[in-house]
Image (tube, rainbow, N blue to C red; front, side, top):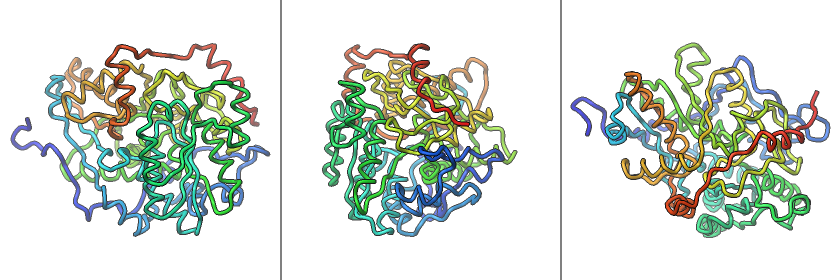
Length: 458
């Protein structure tokens, strides 16, 4: 238990301490991420072209790399107050179980019906769509957290919501699908036969279980083919990391209140939304020379874009209809094994995080899913929260870091992101508990075959 003088088990911010502006980390980056490229010309994409796909205000945010703080609309702040601020929690019981001198904190984003951090951006994107007078939006979802969050936000604002869900997740997570439908969304397994992109992908890869790249292609095509619709997404792009910065801003305010600073910040990494949001203000301090905090991105060994990918321009989707982005990528044709149940399945990484990693401002590790689920169950038994598989990648790395502190006699403060709960992931937990879960790691030959599809951009 907490010793006398220690901070409480849960440190909450007051409602009036909710951030009133998002933090744009690119404003403090001396070397900015490379621009998005038009898929037809390979030239920097224009705002006008992007506005055919995205909401106008989101395009403005996407292309703004100089404004440090962007105001959060009052209507969005009101929605946030239903579930924010989220708690910063001191993991006393985990510290005791590990017998570590390290202090371990986690920022818990699972205290809303969608069960994850994804609602932070879904609310903003649905708001801007409504303000623009749109009828509805289309999107993709992998494990289902983003689709769930967006369906909630669209229901609140009275928007139609069409979700293309990666086929293996659609089949493995029926209850996540039903939550989306409960909030009024239509959910289609991807790749489907409803779009030209889906039909092409099914023809090229018969029986495929799908990927986020496939689902993105279908969602974009669906948006472009319907009047009054735009495409929205839950990760990767700068606009999403901007909205998710509320996680890190709240965490920093809470640490300031207890006169603490994290020495290392750890987050799971798929497309980059949670990690980018969590580290944002702390990384800003590092970029400005005000701290020397370490940052660790934790990705699945079955989809290792940072640790084994190439830093190159690549298509953001399998169907090659989206802009190209310079990022660490496994190739837009890469499809993770269907046996991978831990989420974080995207073939590339956020351009912002890719640039920071390339500048060696951030570290990255890849972990196998059986080790991830072992850490998840350990955490659930000790701290009392059943974590999402994605979050459990960060838990695994945080435990490893705390044990390293113990071995080296270091007393450091660790912060990790607990992005959500795992109650819709019980099929995966069942496979682990029944010893039916395996670790699938792509070979060098697998990756070389995928790299062969990278476009030649001069």
